[in-house]
Image (tube, rainbow, N blue to C red):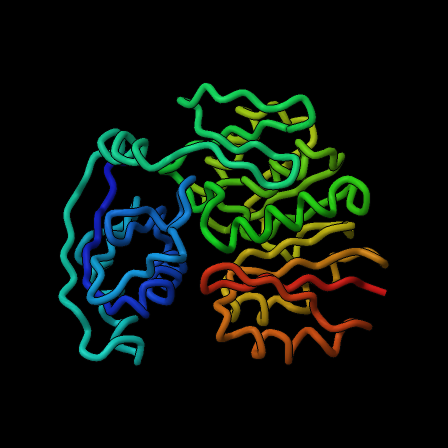
Length: 298
């Protein structure tokens, strides 16, 4: 497998950075940086210092043909997302150079009983904390992007008291699946259609010593057997809607469904699909421009 990454660089209005970043992730980006700060790092942006003016986005892709990728991104943006469509620059970068460049941005942080840190940081957890070790650079999900933090908060609240079995749909780096196991879940499945994401998730499960309880698979959701106490789908709003029936089919009676990857402006769109399927309306939590919806089955 080619270890080089394609760096895509484009300039977008500040109020479109989250939307365009989400679109780039949907096309398979392994990471996105804005204003020279990762959008998915251990140091979340300061909400008191909002970015203004044009912002440079850098997105990183692996195992893609460079010219075809540039054409695909241009066509996506031309579909009404940006007018005019910005110039799209590209270049190859070495995996090692990229991974080393990310280190300056990463610091440990705590969510609930979880201490999340990169491998190169020596911070030790308190006695009551579980340690989750994860590095950036190979798949989406190191914990500080708004959607991932919201899901981690839900996992920390629900596992293990209310959720002994967990299904993580679109597992990415596997951070949510690994977190669930570290917090006490006995049966965890993480699924993703991207082979690189599955490979990374398996590595992270091994790194954190939970391979006995975490299964990572590239099988489609429709082919995964069983029902779960907690189903998490940290994917785009439209994908949550498309998979609504399958997500609910995998939920045990009394179980919880956590939906994220949803821009705040699309909460009502998602709720119109899911609210009628549950006895109670969604519990909605917000962080930055993102939303997380939690439902409980009857």
